[in-house]
Length: 152
Image (cartoon, rainbow, N blue to C red; front, side, top):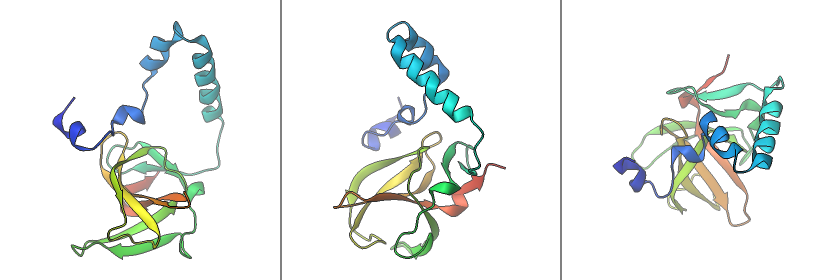
């Protein structure tokens, strides 16, 4: 394991990506778990009308356009960080292809009442945006739109 993994407080790419070898390693130990995994895979094979959004760097599926949600009156927002870097972000209810790292903070939050954490791609660790949570347990992902591409 590289030094980088120790620096990002509990995040590890295998938390979000499980290669097929895991399925076979577990087969003898827990047949019910494998049956459940097979059920999930069957569900994922069904055709969907959702357009997947991929990490521009490694092409991992991050989320779907159907996950876009309205936050503070809009689906998309443009903000600048304290260093003046401008980001156009989209708000997504779920982004299963990424993970959030580091402690949650309210400092410089772009959404009043929400704390944020950095979001990284689950495969290549590219910074994709921020994960926002509120005291009422509402949460969403603010993903940097130019770091995602359509699956088609």
